[in-house]
Each structure stands twice: as structure tokens, then as C-alpha cells.
Image (cartoon, rainbow, N blue to C red; front, side, top):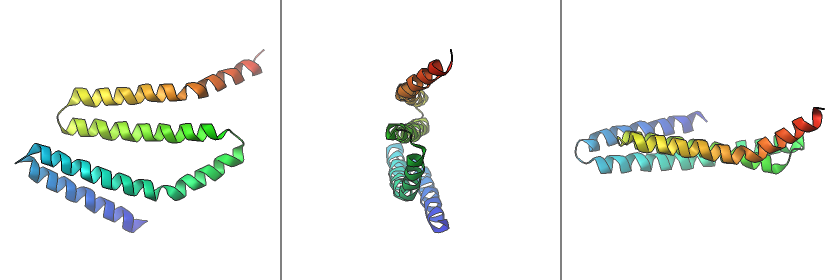
Length: 130
């Protein structure tokens, strides 16, 4: 685990240094360097998450809750990460408005994704209360 963390830190710092150097000559290539590093680290993180997803799936199956809730949880987590990274990349490009719109899209997506959970919660509450 520690080796992976050190490797990811080294990739990120190296990409940041390279992007800083490239930014002086060509801003577009600096951004591509950053995006490439994000894709590489993101892919590694997804592979690294496999044991975690299996463990969470096993724990969730013990609760007796529908598996659809776990899917909503993973989708919500993905939306959060993707919109945060997209917003940060837009911010790095100097496009603050695009960064805010990406974050707004993520928030609205989370709201829409959570509607089935909210509906179930409200049904449960109305059944319990007289």
C-alpha cells in the first residue's frame, strides 16, 4: 500500500513539475500533461479500489437492503470525483465559470440520483407516523 502511495505521489509531482515547465511555452500541452496524469492515477485508483468494493458489497448484502441502493452509492461517489476533477481542471485552465457549471451539474446529478432514496425514506416515515 505504501509503495503505491509513493508511486502516485511521484507521478503527480512529476506531472505538476512538467506541466509548470510546459506552461511557459505551450499552455495546451501543459493541460494535456495534467489530464494524462489524472487519467493514469484515476485508472490506478479504480484498480486499487477492487478489494474495497468487494468488501463494501459483502457488508451491504448483510444488511438486507436492495442492491440498487449500493449502486446509487457508487454512482454518487463517481459523480463527486468526476465533477471535482473536471472543475479543478477547468479552474487550472483559468475557466472559473466552466468549473462552477461542472460542479453545479454534479450537484444536480446527485439530487436526481438521490430521488428514489428520498421517496423510500418519505414512504417509511409516513408509514411510521400516525
